[in-house]
Image (tube, rainbow, N blue to C red; front, side, top):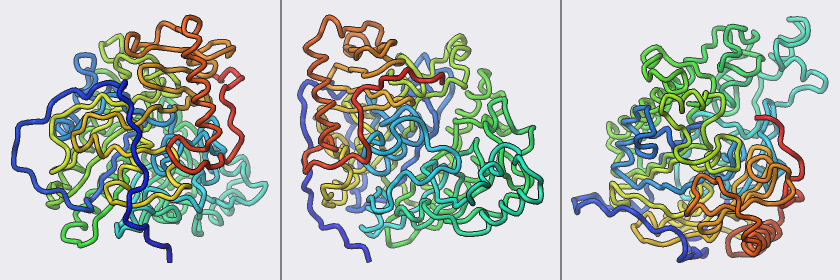
Amino acid sequence: MLPRLRILVTRSATWLASCLLLVGAPAAAQEVPRAPAKPNVLLIVADDLGWGDVGGYGGERCKIPTPNLDRLASQGLRFTDAHAAAAICAPSRYALLTGRYAWRTRLRAGNVESWGKPLIAADRLTLAELARRQGYRTACIGKWHLGWDWRIPAGKEPFFRGRGGAQDEARLAVWREVFGRAIGGGPTTRGFDEYFGVDIPNHPPFCFLENDRTVGVPTVPLPDSQLGENLASVGGPAIDGWKLEGVLPALGDRATRFLAASKGRKEPFFLYLASTAPHTPYAVNEPWRGKSGLGAYADLVMETDAWVGRVLAALDEAGLADSTLVIFSSDNGCAPVAGIDALQAQGHFPSGPWRGRKQDAWEGGHRVPLIVRWPGVVAPGTTSARLVGLVDVFATFASILGAELPASVAEDSVSLLPILRGEDVAVREALVSQSGSGVLALRSGKWKAIFGPGSGAPDGSGPSLFDLEVDPSETRDLAAASVDEVQRLTRELQRLIDLGRSTPGEPQKNDVSVELRQSKTPKGK
């Protein structure tokens, strides 16, 4: 049996007076319920939702109605300088669930591919396992994208790509072998009591997975009609009759059932609800098709907002809203395939005022909406401009529970609890982000340095430097004029790499050798 964590807080926050000030004042005094010592936790993560795709963030530059997310923001705290740890899916999710930057792992660049091995080591404490050790019932519903142990027989890999590459009977026999047995390395081996969802919605296998098995056995290749045109990106094994439009509603069904079943239960729950939208496939359901007037991506954002509203309504109906900490965010910025230029031409800016988009080290790649509602603790209608990251969810939850974190756990996570309680404090000195091609960027106060080609120094010859206080759109590279600042940030990033952590504590080892600067120009996005 896994040992329980001792009830003791040992990791202190690091303060930095030069960070941006907290803006917005608490709402007028009102009767609010006292927050439970162990609140339920509903962690909702959208997929590829841009900072400016939410009305409460984009303002007049957001032309997509998001009434449910706007309402959630009015009921809680809205962070305006929050960042995913990476500008792409898998490394961002790794950091969220482990409190550790993914560039310390084998995933120095890119994503976990279809049929990829688990990225989270079996012996690493996850956010879900932390909750479970504290008596929580844990569940993951939605997109996983952190790898599984598929155990595909050697030499049979071509059967799982495209339309199979072999005779139907031979291909079908291998599919039945692989999908007819338990699959290791998934969510239920990483701290979750139960799981329901899909691995990557636009990649195979095109089926639901429940706990450690596929729901049914895929027996047909995905039809060509569901490939391309911002639907599925890669062909492969599918359940007969699989409909891309059915994925998001099915995840909503399972989430609402989970919440309804939680009513009256003594143990608190931790639900990680990982939306598959508004990532491709842009398979919009009929009630939302054409509703935005801006195209399929915007329609899907509206459907995603309604989906979140449905889940929050289920929380209300179960009588659990007052005892639940709700966190909403996105795994990275809006993807280029959304047609960002066309959207901007129509007056909608998915990245808001920030430069860049998914994959980029620019702000638009990793600056994301982050909304926290916690009745009895978080003052409704408040806003924080403090620098924070999704990697900080781990230490925040540990602080709420009073749980000690060993030196080898959540090495890059700091607690946001002081901010949630209304304190005007900076909780971190610096934050590292990772582009899709592996370029690292370091934020420290108003300064941001990008250490690589592409989103930064086009030739890769040296870092770029930006003053986000006066140049939030990162248009003026100050590296040549501020050599001392470049050297300081370079030394700081190297120190964080060498220590194996960015929080106080015993030095740790990275899983791989980490270079401060990417030397190769990234491939096209």
